[in-house]
Length: 166
Image (tube, rainbow, N blue to C red; front, side, top):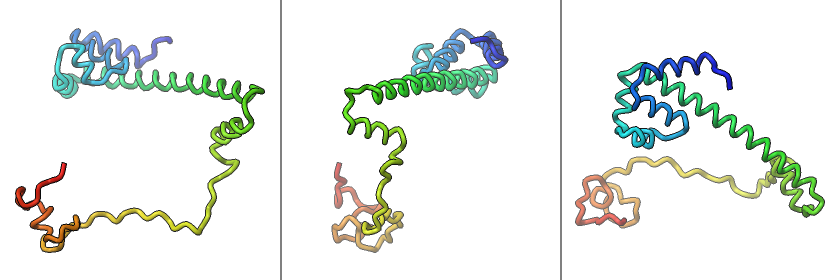
């Protein structure tokens, strides 16, 4: 892949960095997490965060490295998509593939547009649970113990009166 303006910027930014900073940038560009990049460079994650705040060249290089990694992932997904489509095509063209299995694969590819889910109105709509509302301290506890909320599950409940279940 030929060098672009952004890659030249990353290369320029890398020359301004210490060896440990370059190692972190290269590890992140290869897809490592900040934790593993820090461990590989022999530093802590906090050091990386401090460098990002205080060294503009390092922060810029990290940003470019993450863009390069995202581009790399996008290319890999594109290649895998092509392989998957080729594999599905071979599967569907194979005369020994059972017709029922072919139909399932076709439905999967087409997003179930052949037999869309029924819109049967006899089933009640699924209700979402109501958002939790604060329980008044003097109200019965919603856990069903029969004790007032303030004495049962309330924040000020003594730990000995109501031991928490693990």
